[in-house]
Amino acid sequence: MRENSTSGAAVDFLLGLIDGGDAERVRRRIGLPEPEDDRSAEARRNVLMWSWTRTPVPASVLLWVLEEDDPELNLSVWRHVSADNAMRRAIVRGVPFGPAGEGPLTVVGGLGRELEPPVPEDFTRFGLVGALREGTSMQAARTAASMVLGRSDWQAVTEADRDRPLPGYARWALAIRPDCPPALRAQFGTHRKFTHRVEQAGVLDGPADYAISWSPASHVLNVLSTGQLLFPTRVGEAEDALRPLVRDHLADREDAWAVLAQLIDTFQGNAAELVVTAAAIA
Image 1: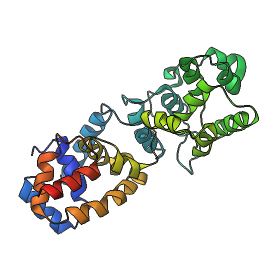
Image 2: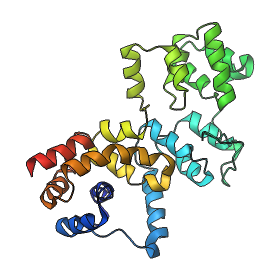
Image 3: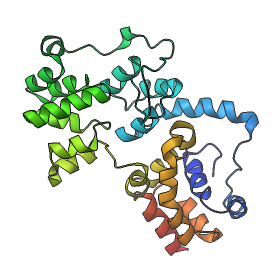
Image 4: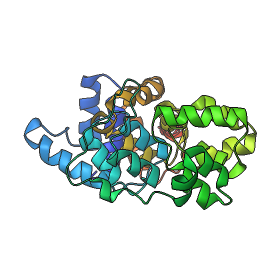
């Protein structure tokens, strides 16, 4: 297994869920290098941040990064291939996403307001709620929805929809925002097709859902391997979800870990299925 392979990072993430001594023995057995020492930490961080911005991820993963309310991490989200106009608008305006965040946040140099996506004409003419009600297409609704910035805006939208339901396009455009409050999304509707569309847009219940249900496993685990750097507040939820599976099915079984290392690059199922399959084959 190559030292710089994404599969190596994915396997190493799972090894971090078992006893350290067992993990070291398994690493030797499958040829996985030891984690890099502090002398190369800065170089590794720079490479990781560069590659991270080019790795497509569900929208909710970017939200977990934004919830750290860290200006440097916000810069990485701004550069990310999966970021949308709503996220970029919030970043350049210093909007906080964390549960206790107070704004405006510091904005990293080079991300001036001149880089903000254009403000929609309907917003200028009708205001936030008016622009959402004026949207007669999905594109217009998504453009209007990109102006919802922070808790007070979400509260205004919630009250407006409660007083008089927003049009369908607006509801859909707001619901697929990963930062849409769960109560508002439920207010919009709970039909199975609606829920499926939200999931297709990359809106997840949390890191545990991502770790267990999303696929392919190698991609998910590689993203989670960056969690301590990019979303340290939330990555523990993924670790807690996977830890019992890893310990029950793999533990210190070197043969099972060897099978997992062979499977991981081509396995199309989720991480839970990968762990169970490797154990069964071994």
